[in-house]
Structures are given as C-alpha cells and as structure tokens.
Length: 198
Image (cartoon, rainbow, N blue to C red; front, side, top):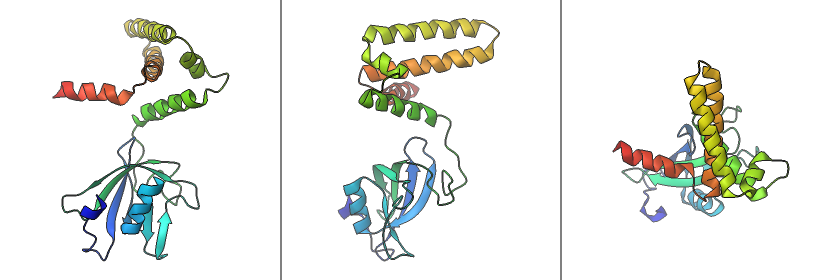
C-alpha cells in the first residue's frame, strides 16, 4: 500500500486520523512521511513525523501510552490515511482519552472484557475464576451459560430491573468465556448479526 500513496501533495507528509479499533472514536490527527509509515508497519506501534521536532516520533515513546497498530486504509485520493489502533493509555498529552472531546463508547467494555479473558487464557493466573472456567471442561462453561440464561429469564419476569441488569452482565461474561473456550470471538457473532440485518 505504501507505494500507492501520494506523498507529493503535502511536501511528503500525509495527514493521518487515528481511530480506536475497539470504540471507533477518533483519537488524534498526526502526519506521516514514508519513513514513519514504514516504522509503524515494522514496530506495530503508530509512529509520526513530528513537524515541530523535525524527526520521527513514536506516540508513547516518553509516556508509555503507545498506539498499537491494527489496520490502515487510504482515502479515495490516496493522500490521507485512517489508522485503527488500540490505545495503551490516554492518547492526548493532557491525559485525556482522545485529543478531541469524545469519550469511549460504552460498548467498548465488551472488547475490553474479551481482551481480559484472552489475557487470562494466555497467563492462566491462579485464584482467577476465569482461569478456572478456561481450564475446566467445555461442559462446565456451557452449563454456566445455561444457568445464567435461566437466571436472566427469571430476573426478566420479576419486577427487579437492577437484578435483570446484573444477571444479563453475568450471562454476557460467561458467553464470552464460552466463545474463547471454542477459539472464536464476539466479532464472529457480530458478523452474523450484520448479515441478518441485510
């Protein structure tokens, strides 16, 4: 893709919009020359050309708040980029989530929870309920999903809306663990919903 980009229009620099992969929120705008783009692809950490410092600048190089590269798309004129990344901490130098006045989408908690479950699957820490489920037989996890589904139904039939919220959260958590146990993820479920919408 690098060779198809037009760096000539703005003196070798392309404007780059960085979007949170998990929430779709716009995090920041920066500029890349060809070298910065190559370094981003190589390190899988978003790197810009700093117009003030006149050098390559990897976001997070001093703060530790890196932008973990996920994907990239060029625009219709091949002279600007949209990069999706996972922020490791606040993006803005002020300590804010974004350089713009936006907050993470509440649905991003699903991705965060799924990432935590994946982390537990890799590290298998002791005294973790998630570890216990992941180490156990698939029947155990499936049974827990069934139990939580029944409890959600019972809560839904009662007058206690707060309990319905709690049981729904338990059901979603156990469903995510079941998906992980089967080596799949919630994105696959969303793809099914997207197809059904069409």
